Length: 157
Image 1 (tube, rainbow, N blue to C red):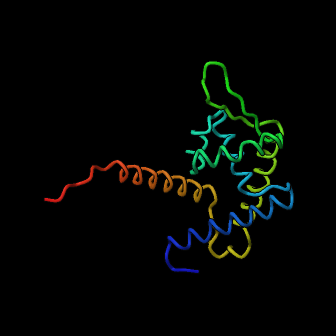
Image 2 (cartoon, helix red, strand yellow):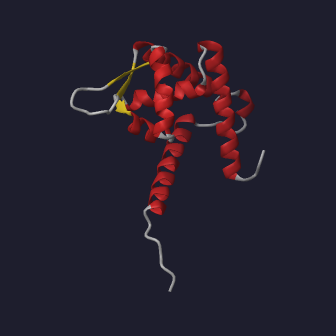
């Protein structure tokens, strides 16, 4: 454990990811990365590979590499609508939708139980408030990061 917020947050996210990975492997035979790919696609579907890559924070090539196996496993569909050139539109297949709904609800329950654990009773966590604050913080970080990326560079005098 660290007394630095940046490290504590990183450690917490890594532990949550590992916990989710264990739950998903045990109950559904999929990894957290697999589930995350499908969950993000559910939020933006139908989506082309570029849009999905941006939402996942990975490269278009990384998305492209995963698509054939997900199509073959009947998790997603991929088609090229007429008049769109080489653009491929991705969407969840029924199997993918079922996993996102069922496993998503299970993970929400698991994390809710963790946050309500009696070990935390001396300093209870208000989950809806925590979620709102984390959403606000995420939006703030995104705005600040975007502002830094688009800040004109200064030329030395």
